[in-house]
Length: 265
Image (cartoon, rainbow, N blue to C red; front, side, top):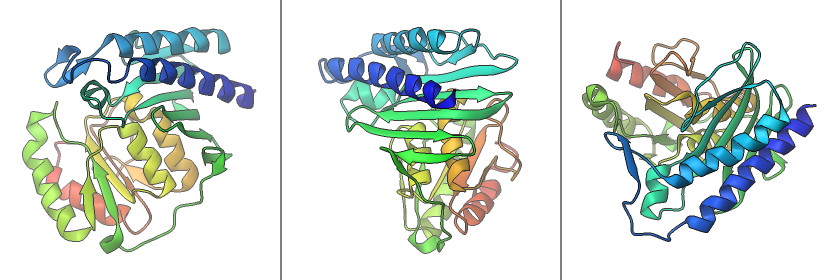
């Protein structure tokens, strides 16, 4: 059953991705509508979610659907959690770093995950208890490493003005401890890149469930520890802060963000 479901999720992600690429760079940078301060949406987001939902509704009838652009429902058993275009700001500016994120959760735990980067045809998948893959190749378990060699990813607190000072406190410490920091604009891909070993750590505040629902399963299946900023089990529906990384990196990064943010996140 899970294999068939995963294939349908991949089909849905590729369908949305093909549509996104057909509209990519066809307009001047900065187009789109404002949902909230610094938060944008376009007809591409909305149509992508519609296409995904149409496939998923037939794949597992009765499952709830929690998406960024339309309905936000959680079911007693199965819930699809979807970000149809993670990295909308990049997309609207003509930057090709964006993704489609689809997760199936069962009883509040991730069961299946797909994250697809249309511009490079890069596909991440995961199944609970079975592993995680990039373009069909299984990802290796996370290996411990020293902080000095670790490249850390993050996201700026563009919708969280109360955390801006804390973000810069954390950034100051992270830059002194780790190799460098990147802000790429798609949290779904950031988590996949931690799972793949391209990044070795990540922290961000005020992510939404649809940003991370798929990526969390890839972290689990590759043995990358993660938590909220207080070191407790992270729940994307409850907690503001997420921190993760390879063993040896996560512990130091978690201490630094906890010190910087305190009780804020």
